[in-house]
Image 1 (cartoon, rainbow, N blue to C red):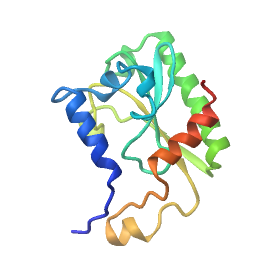
Image 2 (image 1 turned 180 degrees about the vertical axis):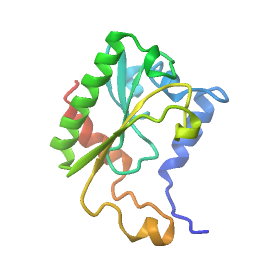
Image 3 (image 1 turned 45 degrees about the horizontal axis):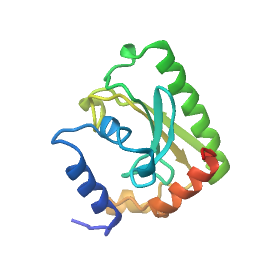
Length: 166
């Protein structure tokens, strides 16, 4: 088995265990924390009904997640205001990522249910993943290892500045 050293993950794991309950929900626990801790938990924006945060285990640099505050697992459980804000925040996330990171394209996706790949199946959320030509290279294919070329903290700083919330 190949091992890729990623020391930044331990702080996230320890915080999740300490702050959340066993089987807790990061999409409920993290926005319940004070806004002063947003950088620590990678929250980029807090809206009225939904928020945007970076994925601490990204597919690519700038991988964001847009989630409603309300703990629901199905799109049909969202009210109209939540749906509208989720879409608006996705559109804004795309513009922020374009401005801050100049990706060549994007993947947007919702994994509903564990069998569909949802790591947190009880709280629906939308993934916004920036893509660049050549971002899939030999490492995942040959070595079964994904390389993230930028530290989470640096990506957060760039995106927070581009988002523009004070």
